[in-house]
Image (cartoon, rainbow, N blue to C red):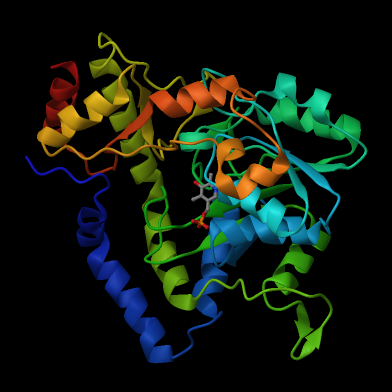
Length: 363
Ligand SMILES: *Cc1c(COP(=O)(O)O)cnc(C)c1O
């Protein structure tokens, strides 16, 4: 049985007529940067999340970078985040010369543990970046409460959680700034790189719009030192089509995620824990196994692709040696990174394929 880790081809076939039409309109207009497709997408992203401003940008990484730039984060500042994430979360902090300060995760959700944050706040702390990992939001109420008390800004790294809900509100609408990614394999994926930033704050929104276009407020007038962080018209057109179908895809992802968990309930592995008040978009369906290497090998023998998100927490990465952390500093992140593995996940995974995967795991 042929199983893809993520089936982007099946999804394209599903929406081909609409996508091809939108894309050919962009080709015909020859307007490849900005324009009506981007305006439409931004309007629809704002409506979808219930946030006042949705701003398309070049990637999830740049969304996070632009958020920090808008807050004037600089050398000497400290930003609290999790070591159990993709490197981009901490990379943008370091890129601006600021210091990532890591906090261990909650063993059940794998998201930053809010009870460990306050002890690490100093006079240099400026912001907290919780990551909504695998498609489930971090405990944003608890994190916002700590931030309010200490006058910090919360930026949700929602690169894996676009479409998820936390206490009835959408991911990206849960803090001062929300950042998401439209990398092709994310729940809402473009056909190339893309991202978006969300905020209700008019000043931050207008500043981030300028920053992603070289700090320009009018043509060749530069109010800030910015970057080229724009989302192009082709990606916007493709995303706008996919967004129309996104509720249905989220529902399918949830059905498939819940089905995995039901089928695996009696297996000797740890399935995802989703809080009662949350929904997950299952950006990854990740399980914990005692002997990961042999499980990966066993599944691979049956041509079942798997992946590991992520095999090494950030505090142990060579790029962050200079921060001075060592093995043992974040025991939960370290343990989870040794046991976690992701199973094939897409809205197009069939029941038959799922049963085949589950059988292989139990075998
Ligand atoms: C994918 C991802 C990013 C980066 O997004 P890109 O669009 O690839 O730049 C950042 N943080 C997390 C948690 C991610 O999963």
